[in-house]
Length: 447
Image (cartoon, rainbow, N blue to C red; front, top):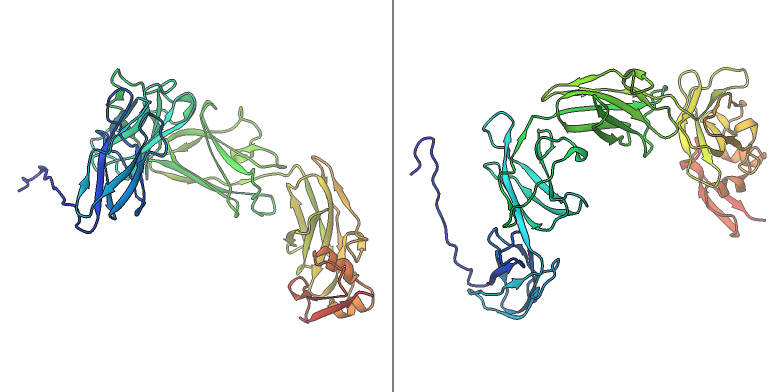
């Protein structure tokens, strides 16, 4: 029975299943101690993997009868494999032991909510070699907030760096350091252990937002990110944007920060458009709060213009493709309600541009009608190129008419699309690339 507000412990001994067998043993380190969290594997009729318990013992279960090799895949030492281990159904083959040439210890402790006695659950504590950063182990936090990191090398250079992480809480290194640079080392005692390495976690603060250009287009290049700096500028957290320009930085300690936004070929700025750290204003993240901070970045490089008809009226149902010379995959922008477009934050280099509309013949920049005759635009570093305009005629963009009267060069188009023109004839459905009122297939004879 369990008294009100109390606990009771009950042990169970499980018998081996009659249709399979087991193998058990102990893994001993060079210091004569059992080693926790060593991976043990079987090779034979059944492939199984398990890990040693805190006292160094292990049990490999659910093994079909037969002859096995039991081994340690990731270790070195005088005994890291046992050959010809016989397994019998319904029985446990014991004494399959291992000896290592490395001494190991463990790091253990408890994770609580800061300032409370409530244990933190559904999290983990990770250990790394302090000076080299080499991974040691990651332990789940138990129902009472307890954890044990095993397989800790006693000679770990500089000790161990331990970090606690849990859903809904701010991640911290031991002794309340929020980042790697200020983490404190856990040192092992003479026996190779470090106990009482406890953590107090605060509920997390978080922030999120979107980074766009001044047209509202999300900036999604691989180097676009938001970086959160501690008030003095020394501690930082960051996240890169996703395909829609959004970022999120979770599991933060509450407090005052400065927020920086940056992206390749855009001008770096701090929150509210401030250009430098010295004048950046502080933002406050409350415990348990989630705040949104967006940014609009100004480009260091850009190509832009307007698309009009022959009378100078904006064409609003059009888009512009930007081809980097040598690349058949364009960047595409639809014009706004004034017929304007702007490619922002693009890499310097050579480009071709082409405009499309369902009501007009497509046009390359400066009125050219084919890829081979298209004018190349060279964009320099830190250059903003405006006035890259397109003027459509009133001609319909039906692909048959355009090729028939020479408005476009069919072979140029096919070559641009990477289809090749060296065969006797080429069949291609232009409808997937062409904004046309008529969807048909077209045959080009190579004469």
